[in-house]
Image (cartoon, rainbow over all chains, first blue to last red; front, side, top):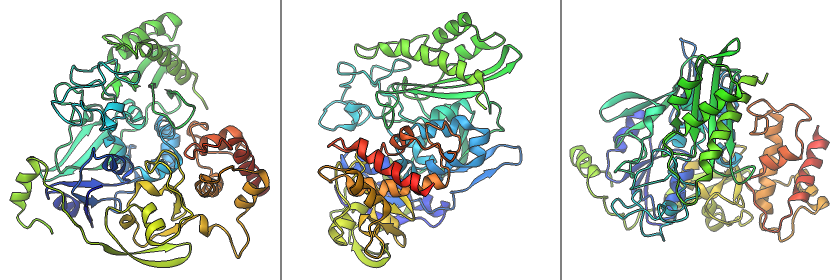
Amino acid sequence: MHSISYERANDVNHAIELARQPGAKFIGGGTNLLDLYKSGIEKPIRLVDVSRLALSAIEELPDGGLRIGATVSNTAAANHPLVRQRYRILSEAILNGATTQLRNMATIGGNLLQRTRCYYFTDPTFAHCNKRDPGSGCDAIEGYNRIHAILGASPQCIATNPSDMAVALVALDAVVHLQGPDGARQIPVAEFHRLPEDRPQDDTVIRPGELIVAVELPPAKFTQTSHYIKVRDRASYAFALVSVAAAVEMDGELVRDARIVLGGVAHKPWRAVEAENTLRGKPLSEEVLAKVAAAAVAGAHAYPHNAFKVELAQRAVVRALQTAAGGKA
Amino acid sequence: MPQDDPTLAAETAQDAPPSVPPYVPPQALTLRINGAEHQLNIEPRVTLLDALREVAHLTGTKKGCDRGQCGACTVLVDGQRINSCLTLAVMHDGREITTVEGLAHEGEPHPMQQAFMDCDGFQCGYCTPGQLCSAVALLDEVKQHQASALTEGEQLEPGQLGDDEIRERMSGNLCRCGAYPNIVKAIRSVVLRQA
């Protein structure tokens, strides 16, 4: 563990100013950053502590939406009455991730920026990882790729995004609010994470020195008819093999609108737009659900150890939609 | 230490990573640990766990994996349980830390400590300080009706804390001896008594 300098930011502008220094990195909850720092994978020179910035509020917006400050802890977000009552899928997804200890530390902003748990990325004894060391190759493609992507991967990288929260945020049409040296901008969470293509080192479209200040949710649309399902190797404290955030808006027996977003299958939360289109205007019959599930994994490419995910993802989509439409009170 | 010329800083930030500083001096900070104020001089890279053990000489908090996976290092910061291995001491300046050494009250073990003894909630004992801090925090979380993955985002209702809930809420604390059945039993006994 090399030496690092540390400064605490007083406000957002101060944080952005401090982050202009070479080798600077923001630290919020620190759970992922310090883990990777100990492994020598993240190499911060200067830490800019943003954990005490005044970004810890959850506020209702004039349009009926909700603004969640970037430093709100995962625990606080999941337990906030407005999140639980209007956006329960977000609460469910957050609570399905990590442990209480980690959720107490981890922030909303940090959750969006966590790195993949690909074994070949997190263990530097493996020589080839294009995400860790661009151009070095990918040990996962020919290796033990059970937890890896089946959708949207590239010859450079088959890692998956590990966040549960982000999957729900995409289903909720959430927007990331950023502030940086060149001002403020907003990006839908669906466009915040990127596919690996030939730059797997970039998980997201965030620019150097930019700080996440909030996540905003539009007015709730699917309050009682959404569900987050997570399939994993243990009942608790494990990353998703496959997860699905499903939300439906019903018009009698027919689906008026839907969101189907998959986690654990790609380098980003995978919104299955074709599957949503297949579902609109149709009843949730077995026949329709089978078509929807097939559409959700259209174009899937399996590797030697993760072919099971193609079937698992389809079953999870069906289960999530059925549960969502069942409308738990 | 800080870069005075922002244009230069902005340029170098894009280039190859700057070199690591060979030495960063310790910084003064105050931690209130188990009710006592500790003035410490600590390098920024030192975790809260190492500060507690190596600087404040409170070795009750244990280092297991040092990666946030095992929970042996669990302590309470301002009443909330966290993994002290995944946070820097310097980030907690001015905060209230409770370690396993601070659970007993006036020489009497905390009810959770007594329950672990009564129920034989350990074998080797290495994970126990973390288990205890976690379980004590769990009691507060239950009083606050905190939701869990099992409540599916709903508030926890009184009487809903069955063994499955306890296991879910304690999943961040591993026990290699496998004392789980008695750990769950100990926690359940305290919850029932407090209900």
